[in-house]
Image 1: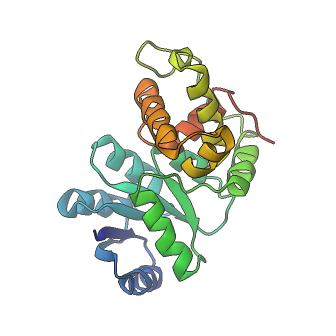
Image 2: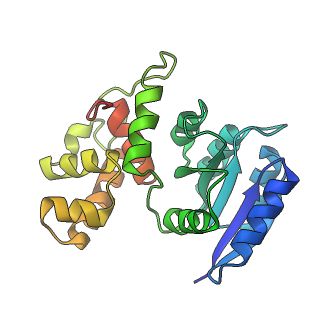
Length: 224
């Protein structure tokens, strides 16, 4: 199955470079480009890509607002944020807006392609080391609102989760994949997939990246 990608960046060289790198992959097709956030939103609506590579700093509408609109449209497109620095002050805001992960612009062709595949498959592109640095940095920002215990959930609280689901949520927030969580808890990977699905439904979240952000903001997990 071919993964359809839209590249949103105001720099032509970046768009062309990523387009060439991804276009060389047999399972990835670049279906379009956008030069700003507003155009990205329109192109997503028009082309229906699976993954959007989204720059944050763009004219007319930045990547954070564009991500928020794309996610709010309840489409299938997953947003993978592009950033120059791994501790970009806007990355956390983009994750809260609904992005499924982030990738550095100097990533190798393999990292770029693997990132697109991971996000398209519904996984979070947040390696454990990156997650720790990211959350530790942004936990210092007083302007970032913290979620209350009643912020999400069918019955209004994360207490709706079972003990095992809460345990899985914490491990998601630590950046572990389904396979790694399964190994840690000594259960089948299919069991973990079921737990993850139930967590997302109960908390009203879009994907595991949002689950990780929720766990930190609800203080189920603390930086460090």
